[in-house]
Length: 472
Image (cartoon, rainbow, N blue to C red; front, side):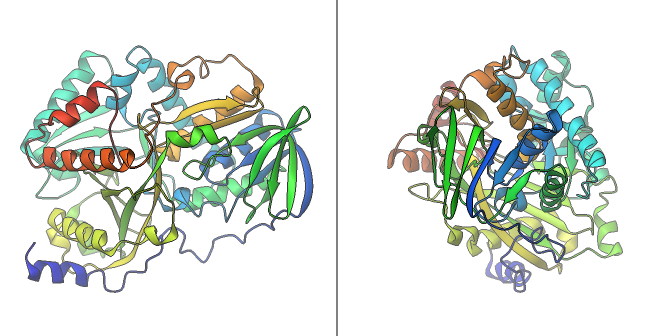
């Protein structure tokens, strides 16, 4: 990277605030009071991100008389649910390629359930007046290298052969640049209905309001410290009180699970994003983007990008950073060296936007598991359920996970609980230093593949054979 280019790109970051754009909103709701004293309830939900909020909301919609309490360690949505790119995908399997590889016999059912889940989210947005800037625009996977364009074409042909191409269009270089004008785009695959764009923080806050309206008792700044059996139910200790519940749903994702044996199944991987200032009409016209799709490129180290409601561009991804020991710390949320790298990539993709400034730059932890998509389970004789491991695609899939947890707690045999994806778990991560070494080697190998025409080395081929890997 030339020094002049570096200084030009980093200048665009000079006024960026190191806070998530979505959470930097004067309209954010005040937190609910912390729990003090003892509570009892039918269902206790731990975690105030999407996973916990959908669980509480769906529980009340299934049975309005059910007494539900939700505990959040800080404020709802402060972690991954308020920091992500706002891509709400139908996929329950972290994309169709991952699902087809892992669950080929179930993929038609998984696709059907995922599409139905996204439809239900859209209905819930309308039913509960969730003012979250929901736009069902779809997403385009773009190729920025010739080999990627060939791979997209081959993948589209395979989808057609398997009857899975409904609503998906292949775009050649001219067609994809007609949608979004970048000199780097060589092809695209447009999933027209399978992804919605939204404001992630406003979705969290809308779910919070809906839960409160339905009678959920919600306590913020109340971390759950300990889970143990208590008679025929469970008890959770908090700093200033406790909750006794018949059933417990754990939606803590990347944070240490109260069921300790679950902790080895996830590691925190840090992802980073930039947000530009609002584009002028002239700047917006220079890139087109009239259909406002979400975009992601096809490299192993990929970028995701989209327009906000006020025509800013969110640009994230590429670096996926695992810190030795798997700690989740506030200081990891800020990484200037990654911001500089992302800024350079942004102006390479959109050279016509040179001079645009970034207003926000931030990061956050993703709960990554070895199969890249959520896993589920129960503990304490079925009185506790959990879902985790969404690996960055949880905006939509967490609602499905909420229904899985409620089914498991009810002991119900449903089309969800019968899925192999629900019944089986991924392989756990090894202890240190093996986890750090394996992840570092995988990252290096993925970067090498990107620079060598997509060719995967022996390490990646071995990981593929065992169904393991690393994905942001």
